[in-house]
Image 1 (cartoon, rainbow, N blue to C red):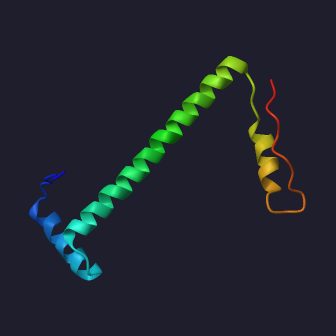
Image 2 (cartoon, one colour; image 1 turned 90 degrees about the vertical axis):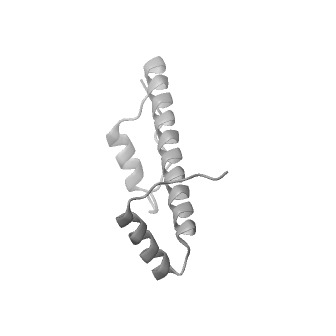
Length: 90
């Protein structure tokens, strides 16, 4: 699918210079930029969906882990004191 993107002259020049410096085409750089944007925004949307699902689950069950419990568990990561994650509770 062909797509047209209008850039102002200064953006065009910046893109051209960067493409020369990287020994790539402007087309390649634009495709890379779009791919990175899509990856980042899809990850953000996934995070939001997971957060909303977790919030809904908490509202329905009341089960949770406190920040203190989570912090204590994380402090043990990679040490001899590493242990299983805390269990959710009321």
